[in-house]
Image 1 (cartoon, one colour):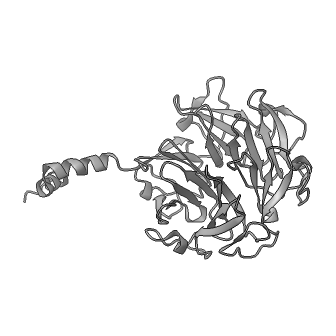
Image 2 (tube, helix red, strand yellow):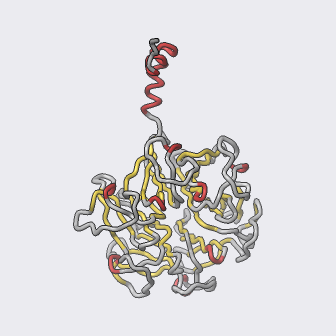
Image 3 (cartoon, helix red, strand yellow):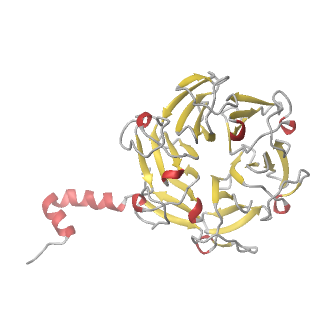
Length: 374
Protein backbone atom coordinates (compact mmCIF):
# COMPACT_ATOMS: atom_id res chain seq x y z
CA UNK A 1 0.00 0.00 0.00
CA UNK A 2 1.26 3.46 -0.90
CA UNK A 3 2.32 5.55 2.11
CA UNK A 4 2.99 9.23 1.49
CA UNK A 5 6.20 10.58 2.92
CA UNK A 6 5.94 12.73 6.04
CA UNK A 7 6.95 15.71 3.92
CA UNK A 8 4.19 15.05 1.34
CA UNK A 9 1.63 14.33 4.06
CA UNK A 10 2.30 17.62 5.81
CA UNK A 11 2.14 19.51 2.54
CA UNK A 12 -1.17 17.88 1.60
CA UNK A 13 -2.85 18.40 4.95
CA UNK A 14 -1.55 21.86 5.80
CA UNK A 15 -1.39 23.37 2.36
CA UNK A 16 1.56 25.01 0.65
CA UNK A 17 1.70 28.14 2.82
CA UNK A 18 1.59 26.22 6.09
CA UNK A 19 4.10 23.72 4.74
CA UNK A 20 6.53 26.53 3.95
CA UNK A 21 6.10 27.91 7.47
CA UNK A 22 6.64 24.46 8.97
CA UNK A 23 9.75 23.94 6.85
CA UNK A 24 11.10 27.32 8.01
CA UNK A 25 10.37 26.37 11.61
CA UNK A 26 12.32 23.13 11.23
CA UNK A 27 15.22 24.99 9.62
CA UNK A 28 15.35 27.35 12.58
CA UNK A 29 15.02 24.70 15.27
CA UNK A 30 17.67 25.07 17.99
CA UNK A 31 20.77 22.96 17.49
CA UNK A 32 23.54 21.98 19.91
CA UNK A 33 27.11 21.55 18.67
CA UNK A 34 30.49 20.76 20.19
CA UNK A 35 32.97 23.57 19.57
CA UNK A 36 35.88 22.35 21.74
CA UNK A 37 37.01 19.03 23.14
CA UNK A 38 36.96 15.41 22.04
CA UNK A 39 35.13 13.88 24.99
CA UNK A 40 38.38 12.61 26.52
CA UNK A 41 40.25 14.58 29.19
CA UNK A 42 43.71 15.62 28.12
CA UNK A 43 46.04 18.33 26.91
CA UNK A 44 48.11 18.87 23.79
CA UNK A 45 50.62 21.67 23.39
CA UNK A 46 49.21 23.94 20.71
CA UNK A 47 52.24 25.65 19.21
CA UNK A 48 52.16 29.16 17.80
CA UNK A 49 48.94 28.85 15.80
CA UNK A 50 46.85 26.76 18.17
CA UNK A 51 45.02 23.54 17.35
CA UNK A 52 41.62 22.87 15.83
CA UNK A 53 39.38 22.98 18.89
CA UNK A 54 37.14 20.03 18.05
CA UNK A 55 40.20 17.81 17.59
CA UNK A 56 41.93 18.97 20.77
CA UNK A 57 41.22 17.51 24.24
CA UNK A 58 40.18 19.76 27.11
CA UNK A 59 40.01 18.82 30.77
CA UNK A 60 36.96 19.53 32.94
CA UNK A 61 36.09 23.04 31.70
CA UNK A 62 34.18 25.26 34.16
CA UNK A 63 33.65 29.02 33.84
CA UNK A 64 33.55 30.68 30.43
CA UNK A 65 33.14 34.17 29.03
CA UNK A 66 33.40 36.08 25.77
CA UNK A 67 36.43 38.37 25.83
CA UNK A 68 36.78 41.94 24.53
CA UNK A 69 38.41 40.50 21.39
CA UNK A 70 35.33 38.39 20.62
CA UNK A 71 37.04 35.09 21.48
CA UNK A 72 35.68 32.57 23.97
CA UNK A 73 37.74 32.02 27.13
CA UNK A 74 37.26 29.17 29.60
CA UNK A 75 39.11 27.73 32.58
CA UNK A 76 39.92 24.10 33.32
CA UNK A 77 39.43 23.32 37.00
CA UNK A 78 41.67 20.25 37.06
CA UNK A 79 44.69 21.63 35.15
CA UNK A 80 44.42 25.28 36.19
CA UNK A 81 44.79 26.37 32.58
CA UNK A 82 42.85 29.15 30.90
CA UNK A 83 42.14 28.51 27.23
CA UNK A 84 41.21 30.83 24.37
CA UNK A 85 39.02 29.69 21.48
CA UNK A 86 39.08 31.89 18.39
CA UNK A 87 35.49 31.65 17.19
CA UNK A 88 36.52 32.63 13.67
CA UNK A 89 39.37 30.19 13.04
CA UNK A 90 38.01 27.58 15.54
CA UNK A 91 41.53 27.18 16.95
CA UNK A 92 42.34 26.68 20.62
CA UNK A 93 45.30 28.03 22.58
CA UNK A 94 46.39 28.33 26.23
CA UNK A 95 46.81 31.84 27.59
CA UNK A 96 47.50 31.12 31.28
CA UNK A 97 48.48 28.32 33.62
CA UNK A 98 51.32 25.84 33.72
CA UNK A 99 49.16 22.77 34.22
CA UNK A 100 50.43 22.44 37.79
CA UNK A 101 48.35 23.25 40.84
CA UNK A 102 49.62 25.89 43.22
CA UNK A 103 49.68 29.49 44.42
CA UNK A 104 52.65 31.83 44.13
CA UNK A 105 52.11 35.37 45.35
CA UNK A 106 54.74 37.26 43.38
CA UNK A 107 53.83 38.60 39.96
CA UNK A 108 54.66 36.42 36.98
CA UNK A 109 53.55 36.20 33.39
CA UNK A 110 50.28 34.31 33.01
CA UNK A 111 51.97 31.52 31.05
CA UNK A 112 54.40 30.99 33.95
CA UNK A 113 51.79 31.07 36.72
CA UNK A 114 50.06 28.09 38.28
CA UNK A 115 46.38 28.40 39.20
CA UNK A 116 44.69 26.25 41.81
CA UNK A 117 41.25 24.99 40.71
CA UNK A 118 39.97 28.09 38.86
CA UNK A 119 36.20 28.06 38.80
CA UNK A 120 35.19 31.21 36.94
CA UNK A 121 36.72 34.04 34.92
CA UNK A 122 35.55 37.58 34.09
CA UNK A 123 36.84 40.57 32.17
CA UNK A 124 36.59 44.09 33.53
CA UNK A 125 35.96 47.14 31.36
CA UNK A 126 39.70 47.65 30.83
CA UNK A 127 40.14 44.14 29.46
CA UNK A 128 41.88 42.69 32.52
CA UNK A 129 40.97 39.05 33.20
CA UNK A 130 39.96 38.04 36.74
CA UNK A 131 40.28 34.44 37.93
CA UNK A 132 38.67 33.02 41.08
CA UNK A 133 40.57 30.05 42.53
CA UNK A 134 38.72 27.64 44.78
CA UNK A 135 41.76 25.86 46.21
CA UNK A 136 44.04 28.91 46.19
CA UNK A 137 41.43 30.88 48.20
CA UNK A 138 42.16 33.96 46.09
CA UNK A 139 41.02 36.12 43.19
CA UNK A 140 43.76 37.03 40.73
CA UNK A 141 44.00 39.41 37.81
CA UNK A 142 45.83 38.99 34.51
CA UNK A 143 46.73 42.46 33.26
CA UNK A 144 45.53 43.17 29.73
CA UNK A 145 48.63 45.12 28.70
CA UNK A 146 51.52 43.34 30.43
CA UNK A 147 50.09 39.85 30.91
CA UNK A 148 51.37 39.78 34.48
CA UNK A 149 49.36 38.13 37.25
CA UNK A 150 48.60 39.86 40.55
CA UNK A 151 46.43 39.01 43.55
CA UNK A 152 43.24 41.04 43.95
CA UNK A 153 41.67 39.39 47.01
CA UNK A 154 42.76 36.76 49.50
CA UNK A 155 46.04 35.77 51.13
CA UNK A 156 46.25 32.21 49.80
CA UNK A 157 45.32 30.83 53.23
CA UNK A 158 41.73 29.71 53.85
CA UNK A 159 39.82 31.67 56.48
CA UNK A 160 37.42 34.52 57.09
CA UNK A 161 38.90 37.90 57.92
CA UNK A 162 39.68 41.31 56.56
CA UNK A 163 36.36 43.12 56.19
CA UNK A 164 36.95 46.86 56.18
CA UNK A 165 40.56 46.47 55.01
CA UNK A 166 42.39 46.01 51.75
CA UNK A 167 41.13 42.91 49.96
CA UNK A 168 44.68 41.54 49.56
CA UNK A 169 44.89 41.26 53.37
CA UNK A 170 41.56 39.45 53.64
CA UNK A 171 40.97 35.72 53.84
CA UNK A 172 38.55 33.79 51.64
CA UNK A 173 37.53 30.16 51.89
CA UNK A 174 36.95 28.24 48.64
CA UNK A 175 35.59 31.12 46.56
CA UNK A 176 33.71 29.84 43.54
CA UNK A 177 32.30 32.72 41.49
CA UNK A 178 32.81 36.39 40.70
CA UNK A 179 31.10 39.17 38.77
CA UNK A 180 31.15 42.94 38.43
CA UNK A 181 28.14 44.99 39.51
CA UNK A 182 26.81 48.00 37.61
CA UNK A 183 29.21 50.27 39.54
CA UNK A 184 32.24 48.17 38.63
CA UNK A 185 32.69 46.67 42.09
CA UNK A 186 33.83 43.06 42.31
CA UNK A 187 31.43 40.52 43.81
CA UNK A 188 32.79 37.21 45.15
CA UNK A 189 30.87 34.07 46.15
CA UNK A 190 32.86 33.10 49.25
CA UNK A 191 31.07 29.78 49.49
CA UNK A 192 33.24 28.24 52.19
CA UNK A 193 32.29 31.14 54.44
CA UNK A 194 28.63 31.13 53.30
CA UNK A 195 28.95 34.77 52.34
CA UNK A 196 28.82 37.11 49.36
CA UNK A 197 31.63 39.65 49.53
CA UNK A 198 32.39 42.79 47.55
CA UNK A 199 35.57 44.70 46.74
CA UNK A 200 35.24 48.43 46.09
CA UNK A 201 36.65 49.48 42.73
CA UNK A 202 37.60 52.86 44.23
CA UNK A 203 39.26 51.86 47.50
CA UNK A 204 40.09 48.15 47.16
CA UNK A 205 38.41 47.55 50.52
CA UNK A 206 36.52 44.28 50.99
CA UNK A 207 33.24 43.93 52.90
CA UNK A 208 30.54 41.30 53.37
CA UNK A 209 27.48 42.12 51.31
CA UNK A 210 25.27 39.21 52.41
CA UNK A 211 25.51 36.04 54.45
CA UNK A 212 26.20 35.40 58.10
CA UNK A 213 28.45 32.36 57.95
CA UNK A 214 25.59 30.13 59.11
CA UNK A 215 24.72 27.14 56.93
CA UNK A 216 20.98 27.49 57.39
CA UNK A 217 18.08 28.06 54.99
CA UNK A 218 17.86 31.43 53.28
CA UNK A 219 14.46 33.14 53.76
CA UNK A 220 12.36 34.04 50.74
CA UNK A 221 13.14 37.74 51.16
CA UNK A 222 14.98 40.07 53.45
CA UNK A 223 17.80 42.59 53.71
CA UNK A 224 21.16 41.62 52.24
CA UNK A 225 23.00 42.39 55.44
CA UNK A 226 22.43 39.83 58.16
CA UNK A 227 20.59 37.27 56.00
CA UNK A 228 22.10 33.75 55.82
CA UNK A 229 23.03 32.26 52.45
CA UNK A 230 22.92 28.49 52.03
CA UNK A 231 25.65 27.67 49.52
CA UNK A 232 26.22 30.89 47.51
CA UNK A 233 27.72 29.15 44.47
CA UNK A 234 27.45 31.38 41.39
CA UNK A 235 26.25 34.82 40.36
CA UNK A 236 25.80 37.19 37.45
CA UNK A 237 24.63 40.79 37.16
CA UNK A 238 22.51 42.93 34.87
CA UNK A 239 22.97 46.59 33.82
CA UNK A 240 20.18 47.74 36.17
CA UNK A 241 22.05 47.08 39.41
CA UNK A 242 20.70 43.61 40.14
CA UNK A 243 22.69 40.48 40.90
CA UNK A 244 21.35 36.96 40.45
CA UNK A 245 22.66 34.42 42.94
CA UNK A 246 22.48 30.62 42.73
CA UNK A 247 22.42 28.74 46.02
CA UNK A 248 23.92 25.29 45.57
CA UNK A 249 22.66 23.64 48.75
CA UNK A 250 19.68 25.99 48.84
CA UNK A 251 18.54 24.81 45.38
CA UNK A 252 17.20 28.24 44.53
CA UNK A 253 17.92 31.47 42.68
CA UNK A 254 17.71 34.90 44.31
CA UNK A 255 17.56 38.39 42.85
CA UNK A 256 19.68 40.86 44.79
CA UNK A 257 18.91 44.57 44.68
CA UNK A 258 22.33 45.77 45.73
CA UNK A 259 21.53 49.47 46.08
CA UNK A 260 18.23 48.72 47.79
CA UNK A 261 19.83 46.18 50.17
CA UNK A 262 17.21 43.48 49.48
CA UNK A 263 17.14 39.91 48.27
CA UNK A 264 14.17 37.96 46.91
CA UNK A 265 13.77 34.34 45.90
CA UNK A 266 12.75 34.15 42.22
CA UNK A 267 13.26 30.48 41.33
CA UNK A 268 13.34 27.15 43.12
CA UNK A 269 11.38 25.95 46.10
CA UNK A 270 14.50 24.99 48.03
CA UNK A 271 13.66 21.29 47.72
CA UNK A 272 15.91 19.02 45.68
CA UNK A 273 14.40 17.66 42.46
CA UNK A 274 13.79 18.25 38.78
CA UNK A 275 10.35 19.61 38.11
CA UNK A 276 8.42 22.70 37.07
CA UNK A 277 9.21 23.14 33.37
CA UNK A 278 6.53 25.16 31.61
CA UNK A 279 5.37 26.72 34.86
CA UNK A 280 6.35 29.34 37.39
CA UNK A 281 10.04 29.22 38.29
CA UNK A 282 9.12 29.79 41.93
CA UNK A 283 7.50 26.36 41.98
CA UNK A 284 10.33 24.56 40.16
CA UNK A 285 12.92 22.34 41.81
CA UNK A 286 16.68 22.14 41.16
CA UNK A 287 19.43 19.73 42.10
CA UNK A 288 22.70 21.42 43.02
CA UNK A 289 22.64 24.36 40.55
CA UNK A 290 26.16 25.68 39.97
CA UNK A 291 26.10 28.33 37.26
CA UNK A 292 24.05 31.25 35.99
CA UNK A 293 24.12 33.86 33.23
CA UNK A 294 21.95 36.88 32.55
CA UNK A 295 20.92 37.38 28.92
CA UNK A 296 19.93 40.86 27.89
CA UNK A 297 18.72 39.64 24.47
CA UNK A 298 15.70 37.81 25.91
CA UNK A 299 15.78 39.23 29.48
CA UNK A 300 16.26 35.75 30.87
CA UNK A 301 18.44 33.80 33.24
CA UNK A 302 20.23 30.67 32.04
CA UNK A 303 20.70 28.36 35.02
CA UNK A 304 23.10 25.42 35.11
CA UNK A 305 21.17 22.70 36.97
CA UNK A 306 24.32 20.65 37.40
CA UNK A 307 23.18 17.50 39.16
CA UNK A 308 20.15 17.24 36.87
CA UNK A 309 22.56 17.55 33.90
CA UNK A 310 20.51 20.26 32.18
CA UNK A 311 20.51 23.96 31.36
CA UNK A 312 17.30 25.78 32.21
CA UNK A 313 16.00 29.18 31.17
CA UNK A 314 13.90 31.47 33.32
CA UNK A 315 12.15 34.39 31.66
CA UNK A 316 12.40 37.40 33.97
CA UNK A 317 9.38 38.88 32.19
CA UNK A 318 6.95 35.98 32.61
CA UNK A 319 8.62 34.06 35.44
CA UNK A 320 8.28 30.83 33.41
CA UNK A 321 11.06 28.24 33.43
CA UNK A 322 11.93 25.56 30.89
CA UNK A 323 14.78 23.25 29.96
CA UNK A 324 16.77 24.32 26.89
CA UNK A 325 19.60 21.77 26.89
CA UNK A 326 19.92 18.25 28.27
CA UNK A 327 17.71 15.19 28.53
CA UNK A 328 18.01 14.89 32.30
CA UNK A 329 20.22 11.81 31.90
CA UNK A 330 23.92 11.84 32.57
CA UNK A 331 25.96 11.17 29.44
CA UNK A 332 27.78 12.63 26.45
CA UNK A 333 25.62 13.95 23.62
CA UNK A 334 24.78 13.46 20.89
CA UNK A 335 24.87 16.91 19.29
CA UNK A 336 21.79 17.98 17.38
CA UNK A 337 18.50 18.23 19.23
CA UNK A 338 19.26 20.10 22.50
CA UNK A 339 16.67 18.14 24.51
CA UNK A 340 18.09 14.80 23.36
CA UNK A 341 21.68 15.73 24.19
CA UNK A 342 22.89 14.18 27.44
CA UNK A 343 25.22 16.29 29.58
CA UNK A 344 27.68 15.28 32.28
CA UNK A 345 27.67 17.70 35.23
CA UNK A 346 27.83 21.02 33.35
CA UNK A 347 29.08 24.08 35.27
CA UNK A 348 29.44 27.18 33.10
CA UNK A 349 27.12 29.15 30.83
CA UNK A 350 27.25 32.47 28.99
CA UNK A 351 25.14 34.08 26.26
CA UNK A 352 26.52 36.24 23.47
CA UNK A 353 24.95 37.47 20.24
CA UNK A 354 22.16 34.91 20.33
CA UNK A 355 24.42 31.94 21.07
CA UNK A 356 24.41 30.05 24.37
CA UNK A 357 27.82 28.64 25.38
CA UNK A 358 28.00 25.78 27.91
CA UNK A 359 30.86 23.87 29.51
CA UNK A 360 29.82 20.22 29.60
CA UNK A 361 32.41 19.66 32.30
CA UNK A 362 32.75 15.91 32.79
CA UNK A 363 32.15 15.23 29.10
CA UNK A 364 35.22 17.44 28.60
CA UNK A 365 33.53 19.52 25.94
CA UNK A 366 32.34 23.05 25.27
CA UNK A 367 28.98 23.16 23.49
CA UNK A 368 26.81 25.82 21.92
CA UNK A 369 23.08 26.17 21.34
CA UNK A 370 22.19 28.18 18.26
CA UNK A 371 18.70 29.16 17.12
CA UNK A 372 17.33 29.35 20.64
CA UNK A 373 17.06 33.13 20.78
CA UNK A 374 16.02 33.57 17.11
